[in-house]
Image (cartoon, rainbow, N blue to C red; front, side, top):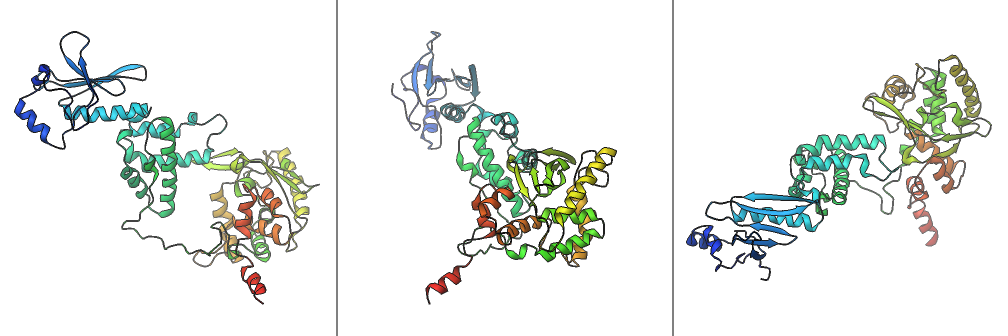
Length: 446
């Protein structure tokens, strides 16, 4: 018998066994309802020889109708190498379950009937990544936090095949701010990709979500300059050489090592974690070079040392003197000798260039509160309300712009020294595509 459509009877009415399912008139009324679901497929006699008729649905799913009124309907199939079955009190209810089973088998997605909690566990599992290509500790910690706080309460108890785009949207909307919502959105997108690859999901539409403010204040629309990259760093966000020198003097009032730390960060381009992990063995006073091969990160109150951002080592350089006249090379050479002596006597066991008062790695929160906060005020980097355009990370922008426009280093070399992924990022951040547009246009129209 050819496969029947959903709206057609599943079995010829001449077969006497199926008339035992219920009253003929009641069955006729049920069949007249357009919303009633039916099991469609080919009919055959049961193999046990009991004159029972069964229905073979696609993907070797066999349905056993009820023998009499009120008897349960049963579906049997093989999945994952084992025999499985499910039951329902009526054909309509079983048809809904069979539809999901067939969809799961057709998509080769055996995890679709598993709860969302297992999907989240799979997404966070390090074993799903190729060897040597797993997440960094920081990224893994962020993803665990987002899944635990926003996704697990919404989809953790829902079967993967029942997860809807509305569920993902609800998880994203639970974020309190647009920035946090964007992080959750990216997490959802990665989760859906992993779920499809792992056989838990089949619909890519689940990733098409975005943060909605609802009754919360919506951020104002972002206005950008036509033709300018979104990565472009406004010159107002970059301290001048005199501003760096002023911060250094404010830090020197606390300890001379902090002044060296600020100038070293501003004219080597090291990120905070790379600076906190820097040891004497990474710095060559003879060639004025720095080997950047590690960083310090803080996760759950614990400090870890790992490879730099993107797991990319690099080498950078520092000048003999800063544009403001600070003798950087001389100070660095003296600090190397001092740090090595501290390593010998045990006060600086790790040989760090910029250790905490206890000779260990600095925590960024402690350094910001104890050292930077008063120095920012003294240097004029912060107003009376604590606001200001510059942060410690602004010193990294100082290095890039100084290298480009003061030292006139080729942008490709600056990209390598700063550890950017490619030269395009360097150009987009510090040069911009609109620089000089008016001047060129004015000259052309003379």
